[in-house]
Length: 522
Image 1 (tube, rainbow, N blue to C red):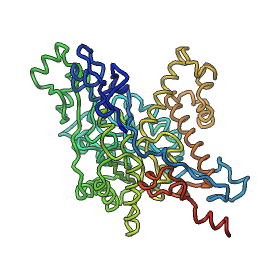
Image 2: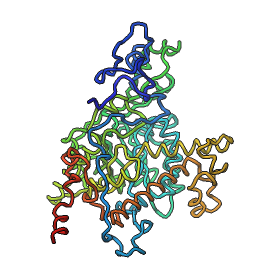
Image 3: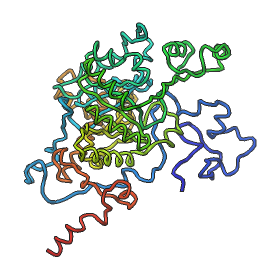
Image 4: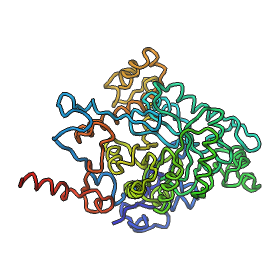
């Protein structure tokens, strides 16, 4: 059985000539001399490295299509008809709307146990930031400004190699802060290698008042630094001059000639690989605290287990506030497609390791920061299972691609309403924003007539988050857990013996065995 499907994917706009193909290679069972080449091999022969990436680049996010042996569908949520934790065991009190899903991260209040992480310099993140930031602010959760935002900002100003002004960074932070209410939520700003050289975190702490900063070791979508594509040689030259790796080289006379003739239509900007170490991390944490950082996060990717152990030790010794562990199979706006599918430890496996390592440290009395798990979470059942699998150490779920989807759809439907071209799926509800977007009801309660200032993209994010909150409360009520602190590993069970072996979660046929016998036999 093959878990992968190489050589053709809708992600790269490639296909096969035949229905029958080799499962390992992904090639048609017969490759015909004369075929124009619809597959990735054929299109790569003509366009080369362009076909490493999903298409249309800059307008899509992508997530792995690999069918991992164990994922969250291999677990179900335990329900019970007995008792209640967190409220009185009274049918008139223990109702799902009374489930409390708020939590605190230090002094930061969050209305739900999830947030959006690492929306960096990709064009799709930039173009949809307004919806994500405003929707998150209104709902009351956090949002992360990812890597390279200052470095890629064409209007950014530098002095002696350090950023002193970035209109794009200022826009992102301002959008959230202008819509933040009742002190809920916050903005996290991230740094990678180039950001650290530019002094990005020092800039946002000292000039923009950011209190929560993040050191990035990696992410689950890829094993290399971030990349974007640039539309012209002028932009490619600007970013190379700022210190980025750019391919092809915009200073090469051959490349300049081809670009002028139209033979090269895009350039790639790449970030450098980080070189993580305990000593380097602790030194950077101390530097940031001296600069005024109140909260510090570390984000690590789907690396091998010993790297995860290093991240947990670093987070513990640095006494930081949040560790984000990002598993393979999630999503991004800027990952090589095959890397998206074929590298790294998938989320369930990585979270199982995270739980084991955190438990070892906790048993030694070591500091354990709040842990967030990322890597493909989209629905309320995913959130519940993610919290339960890592309980009591995993406090939050980090998302990215799904929030962007909500913002993009909200923006698109808002535009179609304005033009009168409402899709039939939504036309049945009416022809106005307030008839079609259910989030408008809450916006009117919160903002009064100012609700009209909320862009449709933000209404989409708020509506999506409201659905997640309602669904999570329903699952928690069914498990009789009326506060997040009561969610435990006992709240899920494994449907397969392999899932049980990987995670230590009981196999369904072994669940409650002793308790059941005691009930039956007295």
